[in-house]
Image (cartoon, rainbow, N blue to C red; front, side):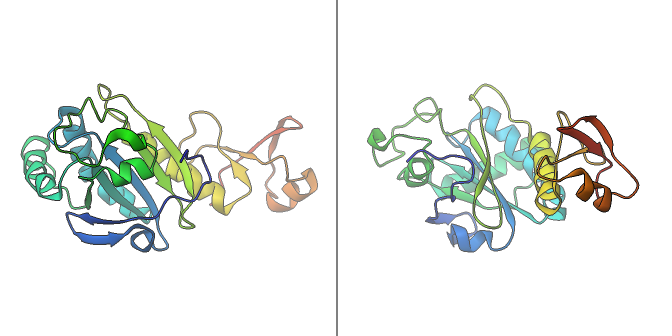
Length: 219
């Protein structure tokens, strides 16, 4: 199954380092970040998990749940977590999904169906495509997918930036321009007329082109 933006994130039941979960139920009314790894004890992923552990308070402030997935057994995740804390200086307190039968990786279109049904004997290279970040909204829709190669560490500051944009634009009729950061001016949607924009933004807005109007970020 090919996944696209605004598709419903596939639901699943799985064992994690914090017990069994039903994914949609686990998300509840929160935003969620699901980020996947080809294998436990891989160097780049070790640094990523450590950084996400340090960033967790920032996700908590935004009511965003974090969950990892690695194509390995949950028991191995627990051992790996000790290595992560030792080398990265941060304890992983979010759950990590075990996917020893490759079910979630296949469900999320990160591995093809013909890749077998066991993590045994597989290497990180076999699972190289299991390197996707999914941002999922409270209505369980996929709002972003970022796919990285194994050799390149992911930019989770960018994930936070995108979440800030998504949460802002979900509340207001605006979009965010290139390289936007929290506090920067935003773009008024073209579906909003000038009359509506004047009513909504009495302090005024800037018209660069009829289709490109900017305004201070709504509070």
